[in-house]
Amino acid sequence: TETRIIMDETAIRRALTRIAHEILEKNKGIEDCILIGIRTRGIYLAQRIAERIQEIEGKPVPFGELDITGYRDDQDNGRSTGINSSTMLTPANLTIRNKKIILFDDVLYTGRTIRAAMDALMDCGRPEMIQLAVLADRGHRELPIRPDYIGKNVPTSKLEEIEVRLSEIDGSDQVNIMQH
Ligand code: 5GP
Ligand code: MG
Image (cartoon, rainbow, N blue to C red; front, side, top):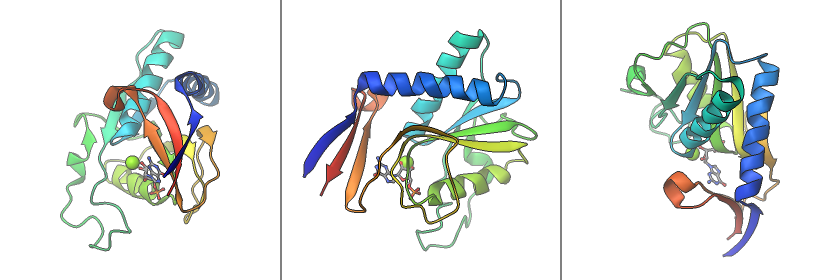
């Protein structure tokens, strides 16, 4: 396996700072916005952006976590069977109705996870709008989904894989591309 670094700690920090500013610019502030991270690493990205926005704007941004295990459409086990949507979005008292949701994930690939995330969210209430932020977009979409905020575009072959390391769980910040 051949590994190449495509983002180091500094590059990740700069990309997240840029995305925080892009979110503020696009939404003309942070009024009515909720940042929602998709388990696992999307949660840390949303958390970091929430911290930066708080530093820039001086006010807190509502923040949540989404676990969409069971909603994926490509596991061939019957979609969302037996899943209680109220257990997927935390904190449980988060109200997304009429809010602007900004979804965070680490890597965007076929788009199926984001479609599932949007399904899960819609079951929790009707947001005014959903936007998407990803640290790396590796291409190969199978659905008409495109991110509003991108850390880095990383054209990949289907044989390659992106490794996202975040200090909160991986001990360091780095994005690598791995050729199997
Ligand atoms: P998709 O559903 O768009 O095909 O894949 C995106 C989801 O799978 C994301 O939640 C992401 O974490 C994971 N994923 C897909 N491809 C990669 C990859 O190359 N590297 C990593 N780290 N995650 C990936
Ligand atoms: Mg993931």
